[in-house]
Length: 155
Image (cartoon, rainbow, N blue to C red; front, side, top):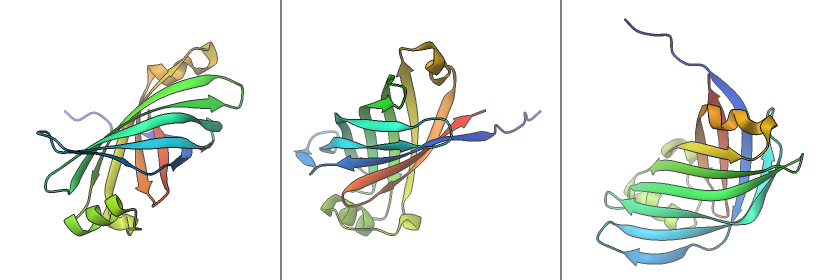
């Protein structure tokens, strides 16, 4: 017996500004990088605000450079003043050539890159408690100086 497929509800779009990557180097696990998050905006039907500077995206690049396992942690400040902690784990997969371009900060056709994420939210105010009571998924786009994300609540 198959159950009905879940529906998705658009929550928001993020335009995340980033700084120059900090290259840790190749470890036994793969290539490690840290991408500083410098700010950005949150727009959408259910959330609006800004991204607080000071977060970072910690990356592990494996598969001969074609897979990037991302773990970004940052804070949103919503228009009502509520601050929301976000941990966003993602997988980005592209060809070796496109992956090298991304690492060099060059543009890549987004249709050639698989970029999906699973954000988890923590908020301290009752009106945002629903963020901890649902699952979310997202899609991403890496630009040379920014990351764009769209988040969806799984209903």
